[in-house]
Image (cartoon, rainbow, N blue to C red; front, side):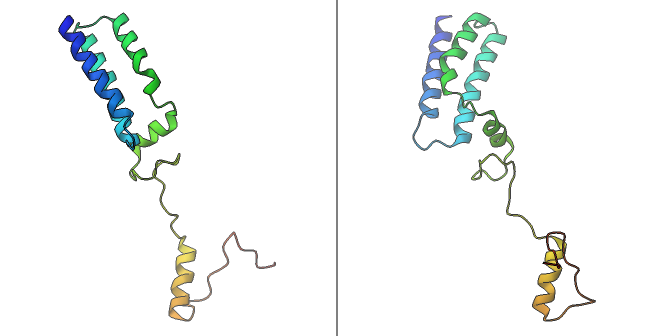
Length: 126
């Protein structure tokens, strides 16, 4: 049991060190935290530590856990890693078909097949 405690202590120190590194990315911080938690769970399942010890070890690193669960969820699914901003998979808005048709007509210099009716955001009476 003593060797297990030494290994866990080493993992905890390394985890805290990596999470608190200046400039550590959110993804990296999350990965280190949850890897450590997973290691504690594995040690418990293998019978190397009991549940009381596992809970105590959870508590020792809890202050390093990222508390904003929305950011945590977004980091797990975001395809644009540089856009952890509270909006999942946000990209620049794509033009509507109506706007694209207008643009093509302007580029061609004349309407093709008639005018494009005004969109719902445009009020021709104003």
